Image (tube, rainbow, N blue to C red; front, top):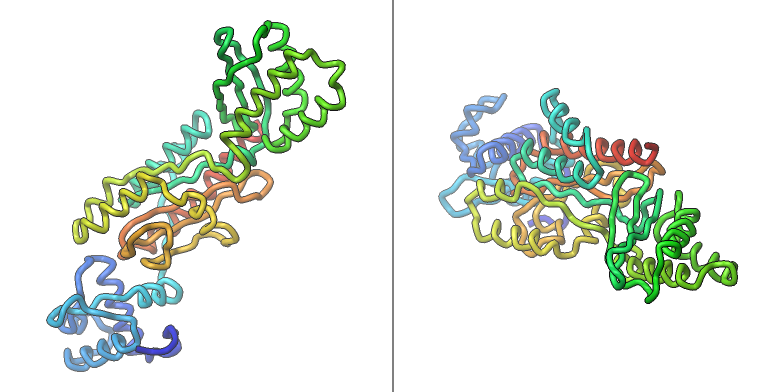
Length: 354
């Protein structure tokens, strides 16, 4: 086995073509590729014995392997990485796929649109699609409201600039009145517009301190209790949710059901979700993680194609990805993930200006 990862420059033209044909055939069929099969597709007329020798050299370089002694070859993770980095031919997004993705974000709130775009991406790739919703703590606000439900129950409602609405129950101070509710809402909303939740909490604290004598005590308590509810449950850095659609597509690849079940368990638990965004941070466009390169899941054998998306300020706020077996159709999946990430970014920008 070589001491370093092979480069395309290490391959002769003949070995490069054999390598490319093996990988393309494997990605298409999922089956090991034999020397006799390859002789029928190569540009150069070669005997099966010559092809076997080339495949043995590629195996020695760590680019090919074989499941058992009598089988043909399959690409290793290192082989797939070399192929993706140097030989992958990426296609475009066809008109029908664009229309389906565009339609998924055409109407409704951002949260609902993200659900639909995840389902559309899963349907187009026949794999599991994941969409990491934007960080609510980092999203600008438009409006804050307090709603009384009963003497001991109230809602604090946050309306974000992108149209997303979230509300949370809290216990208001005893003796609340309609006027204290209105005063609290007016006070907070005057400070909220354009600020993130974290910025709002700081501004409210400073303003309450500066105007303590002017603000009704009940209204002040309402503000502090309502925002404390959000501070405790949606602290800095916490993401709202990871949307997973199309898990059933993973079961269509029945070659390794134990691996698939483990992957589904990981997705169901949504473990280490913050790391999902970390994978996309700092990336220029789409990133591909093959097998053990992907530290999110407990077992190898799966690939993740992921791209960040940005808000109107060009800040990375979430990510879109596709998860499937290592024999993904990367040439088709990569442009779909890229287009979807750009689409979600435009959606957020449009809603923030609306």
